Length: 300
Image 1 (tube, rainbow, N blue to C red):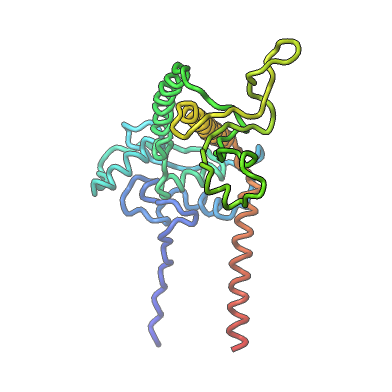
Image 2 (image 1 turned 135 degrees about the vertical axis):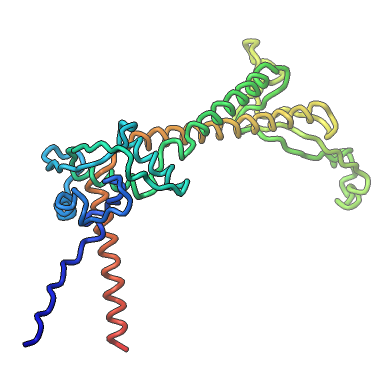
């Protein structure tokens, strides 16, 4: 009679069905899922369906967690665990452990798993405080420069919608030459003089003359004489100063808009429905790609 076959021992489950690091939860190196006190709970967690993280009717799950007796919170334990991993140290199996049973909802369990294994980043990682301080320093420096600009009020600043133009005058005038002279003959005898002027589409300059009531009249042109004349130089500098201040104003508007957008982002609430929709869309896109690939193979 053939010997009875030896009964195979059941294969022990090595990995957590939910994704936890059992050694970390139990605080014992080499702990596998089969020996973890949370195996049943993690099976239940892995089978839960999607529910918003702010839902009030979430089911509570009991999680057993161990902590070193000098540690008081889960976060402190995770920090210690990462530090020891980086130093390539292992836990001392003989060290005293504290066993705690913690009730948590499914999204709290998911967060705990991801924080322990997902290379969790914190607020300081993104250096927002440093950027805020840099902005404050830049604002202080800019304020000093702006104060200096405002204090220096001895220069001309041109208004909007005016520009500097050059024009020429030919002397003597054409009317002073004999009528039978050709234009070519006249040009040979004339000299060309170049002048500059400020021009506006609307009358916003103060004219030299006065109206019938003795009030200054408005005009559209101010003559600035030759290129090297101080009136031309200062008139054109006035336009450059206006353009400079407008560029500063534009950049400040961009900065204000950027800060307002950053503040709006900080106030944004995460939407469970949006995240779920994104996940479903990603799955549908992958399904479409696989179907197209299968169709291409079938056609070949």
